Image (cartoon, rainbow, N blue to C red; front, top):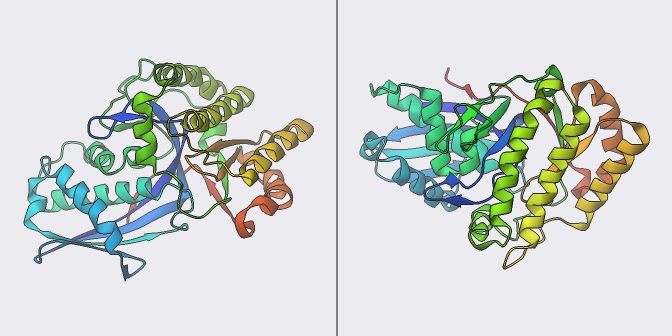
Length: 337
C-alpha cells in the first residue's frame, strides 16, 4: 500500500525562532505557502522491517535517521505504523541545501501520506489536514504550515482566533487580493550547507539575551499585520517583513556562539532592492530565511518589471546567476493515480 503527495515549501513573514518541548514554538509565525518549490513524496508500507529513503531514485541513508525519528514521534498517535516497514521515495523541485526549506516541504508531504494511509487502513481521522499539520510539526516545526495554501499561522497568539501551538491554521481574517497572488523570486546566493543548522539556531534562543523581547515583538507583529493584510498596505507590509528578516539574522549575530549566515552578496542584493524601490517606486521587498539567500517579494501586477530588475541587478550577485521564480500557492495536492 502506498500514498503520494506533493507539498510546497513556505517562507515565513513573521519568523519562528526558538522552540520548547517537542517541536513547540516559542513565538507565533505566519508564512506564505509557495508553489514551485515543493517536494514530491511516495510512502510505501512494506512487510520488511525498517526504513529506507531514496532521493531522486538514489538510496540516501543519511535521510533515514530523520524519518526514523519522525516515526518514533508520531507512533503514539498512529501506533499502526510500527507494524510496517517504510519505503520513502522523494524528489525536490529545487536544489537540496539551496536555502529553501526542504524539511518543511518534505515533512509535510510525508505527514500527508501517513494520514492518507491511516484512512486507507480504516483508522478514523476527524480532521485529516489538521492531523497532517500536527504530524508535520513533529518532523520539522515549519512543516506544519505547508499543509495549507496561502497565508498560514502557527503558534498561539491573541490576534488570531483558533491559533495553536500544535498545528498551523489558515489565516482566516481579511486578506486583500494583492497578497493572494504575491510573487517570490529566490536569489540563490549560497547553495552549500549552512554553518549552523536551524535546530541548533533554535536552541540558541534558550539563553538569548533578547529572548523575551523577541517573543513579544513577534506577537506584536502578528497583530500589526492584521490591518495591513486587510487594506493591502504595501508600504507597511514591506517595512514589517524586512524588519522581521533582519531581526532573525540579528538574533543569530547576537547569540552565543554567534553566527553570520548572510554573505557579502546577500547584502549587495538587499542594497540593490532598497535602491531600486526608492528610485523606481516599484514595491519590491525582501525577506530572508536562516541562510544567505534572498526572497524577493512583489505583487503580481509588477511581475514583468520586477523580473527585469532581478535579471539586470540581482543575478550578478547570485551563485552562477541562479534564481527561482515562485509565487503564493494553493497548498499540497495528492499524486494518487
